[in-house]
Image 1 (cartoon, rainbow, N blue to C red):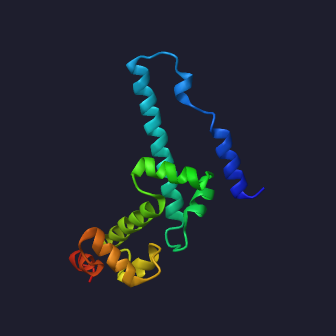
Image 2: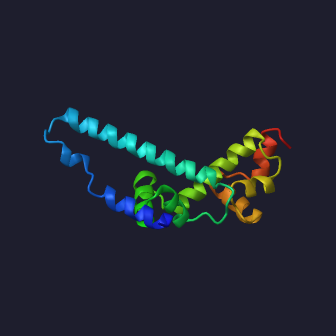
Image 3: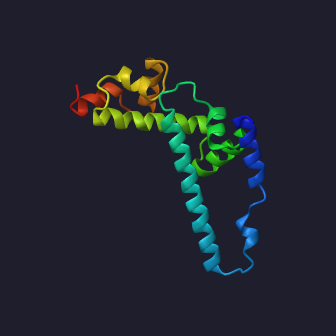
Length: 151
């Protein structure tokens, strides 16, 4: 059985699970605990998403389909869940995640050139990486390297 079919099957099996239906009382304590469980579940889900992104961070061809298969969910569910948790579509979230990781790498000196950092976080073209970096942080990557004392 292919991984995509398995992910779809897993998604179908998990549709009927609804913790709200299992609760019969209407107390605020129970509602609070349901929200706490929901937050824990969301945090675990985001941690799984981050693990998939980290494993494939330097792969510029990483897309929604590959992420969905790795998380064993449908692409539609991936889109809904990421949008619900981050208010961003998955590809935009991936791009933001890559840029955040890039600034960490530049500040920590893990990579000493902008080009190395660009490829390490999964961008194909250095010029596009620099423009996106500058748009998000208001600084050029080389400036971050210089401010951190690595150049």
